Amino acid sequence: MSGSGTTADDGDPLQTAVWRLRSRGCWTDAAALLEPHAGAAAGALQRTALLTERCVYTESGWAEADEALRGAEAVARSDEERGAAACERGYLAYASTLFGVRDRADEARSAFGRAAALTAPAGRGRALLDFRRGLLAENIEGTADAPQAARAAYRRAHEGAAAHGDTLLLSFTWRHLAGLALRDGELAEARHGFTESLRIREELGYLIGTAPALAALADTEEEPVSTRLRTEAARLVRLLGVPTWLAAHLGAAPPRTAAM
Image (cartoon, rainbow, N blue to C red; front, top):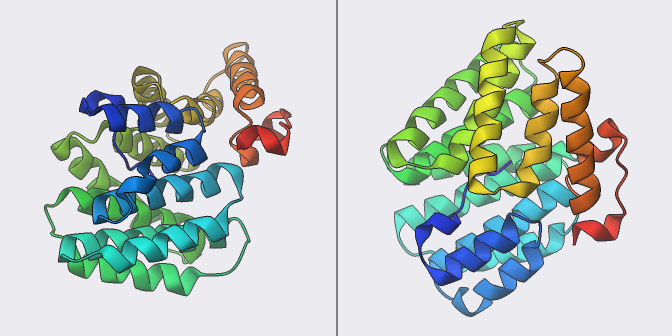
């Protein structure tokens, strides 16, 4: 997951409207609100992030996301803007590879490397970049030390998100650090991380991310709590139609059109 973006707490009416649509899976409508601002780097990058997140949750819309990304790259002027665009390219290429749309792993590595060279070490964008590089290491690299590399990247991202007050990103770093802990048999640590991730998403109203958080926490709980959590996750997937990749696992099987 991206973990990037602004929330309703920002106080900007436009951002509040975008967040309310995004958090409920209405990415197309949210992107439409940003269309008049796509000539500036900030608007173009945010629009790209929205459409890429739609790809991650619905496994569709890849061409539109790529088109938005090219537009964001075209209007980027500063190193920070170019670095952010490279980070978005790396994430979209990673997602395309992960979901088997097209193998773009080399493109993801190259883009993340370019983003690292352009993004200030203490900048807000560095935490998101570290998190996404952790995703690449954990899910694509396939090397013996990939889990260790992913954990180190997630921890850097976690510290950076905390330093910059990026609460949404913290929900993702908690979740993925917990996933590695569960893989290592550290049940209490995993339960704590998944609980924190769920708490943050519920407090922010990040509805589309609540079902994955519930399902992850269920893997650390005993009956009847685990069944209750999975049942609630399945209910949310049926309601929202996303994430599509979680539907089969939970037996929710939403209609494809529900994700749009």
